[in-house]
Image (tube, rainbow, N blue to C red; front, side, top):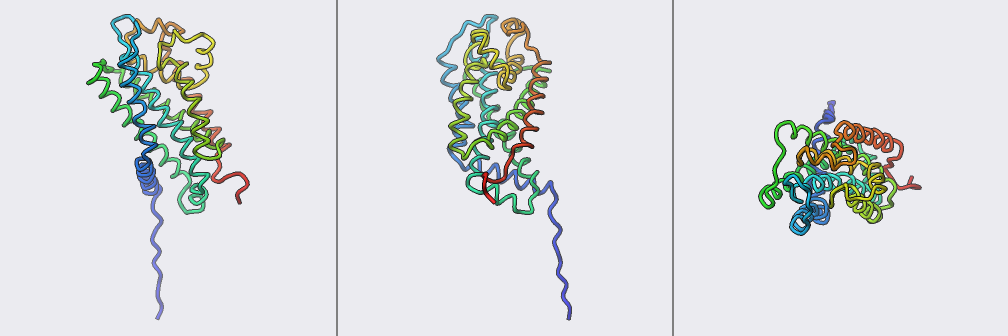
Length: 272
C-alpha cells in the first residue's frame, strides 16, 4: 500500500506580513519602557510644557497652539527613528535577527511588520496628543485641506525617520548603546528645530544645522496646519515652504533607503 504526503501550500506574502505585523505590535506593547518612552513621553511634555511655557507669538496664538505641531513631530520622530534604532539593535545583539534570517519568512515581511508598528504607534500618539490639545488647552484643529497637508507631512516624515532609524541601528552594538547614542542627539535636534520654542528664536547657525535633518522640516510642515498664515512670516524664508518640506523629506526617504540597503546586517559583525 502506498501513502501520499500532502504538502500544505506556503502562506501568501500578505498573510506572513499580517502575522509579522501582529507580532511586532504585541512585542512593542508588552515592553513597558518602550510604551512609556515612545507613546507617553510626548504626552508628558505636552502637559508639562504647555502649562509652564508662555511665549508671545502674536495673532492670538498661545504657546500650546504653536507647540502642538512640534510635539506631534517629536511623537513621530520617537515612534520611528528612535524606536527603530533601539529595537532593531537589540534584536541584532540578542540573535533574533539571525534566527529570523534562517527561517522561510520573506525578509521583506520583517520590514513591513516594523513599518506597520511605526504607523500604528505614530497614529496612536497623534490621536492622544490631539485629544489632550483640544480638551486640555483648547487648541484649534486643522480644517479642510489642511488635513491633507497634515497627512502627507506626517507620512513622509515617518517614512524618512523610519529608514534613518533602521540605518542607525546598524551602527549600534545593542539597544543600550543605540539609546545612549540616539536619545541625546534627538533632544538636541528637538531644541534647535523649533519644537520647544519659536524657531526664529533659535540662533541662525543652529537653524542651519537643524535644516540638515528631517525633524525641522516635519515640524515646519505641521506648523503650517496649526498656525495662521500671518505667522509664516516668522519662518526663516517668510513662508512655510511646503514645497521644500516635501522635497527635503522625500530626499531623506531616498537617502535613508539607500543607506538601509547598503548597511543593514542580520547578525553581528564577525558572526558566521
